[in-house]
Image 1 (cartoon, rainbow, N blue to C red):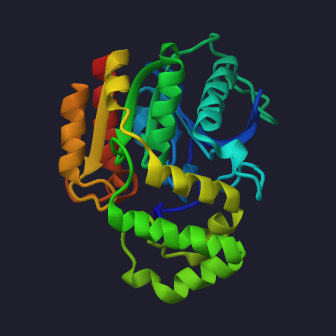
Image 2: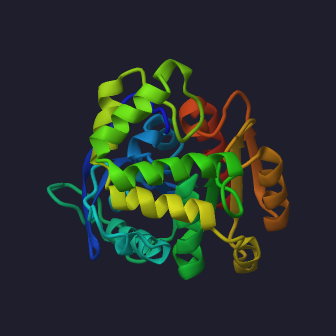
Length: 301
């Protein structure tokens, strides 16, 4: 589970509900698109707040950043007992709808939402599970994107050790409600001892618990299955020819760093390893991560 520094949007950001043709999505937005717009997709059990420390430096660099809760994540609505809407193809369609809405300046309750040209091409960033969704969206319609950044997101299924953890969570969700699962997680792994993307905690456990309870159990079960069964689609992505950035920390238990290195070679991708970071460089080393993103987007143009 990711560890955002805070759940309070920093000055200069706007938290609102983005109205799209496929429903509403909770977003945090910052900056103006002087150089372009970036859409940021969080990972498994994560949320838009995972990118909260990236907004200010990227806005200062001339980029509009929009971090989104996907369908059934935290503050975006989704069914709780039906996995069908969380199929990867459905989530990819959600991403295209979000881009349409951002391009048209659509929002709910944001009177001064900026207006942008239709069919704007965006820089897409997907963290962990969000990277799998991002890749699926690019393969569905690559014409909508200027670049793709796979942040701590590998070529196929997650590591065997993480598959075991996901299976435990899915088994628990089949027999317990979200509150009971939360209590079980806390009893098994106290926050001060937890590490890794799937089981770490925040200093402020109230925020983390509120986010956990906001997730749809059906979304978690569906996402967990996809993480454990994702096929290798690197060759498909390479054939698209879109500029790709493979960004990770220097240590990762979900997809080992050598595996990410190899994927970058197969994609002929721009590669960044953020020193001192693990599976969530966006939270562990946000300044360095923002700098790496900005440099890549500047290079893409």
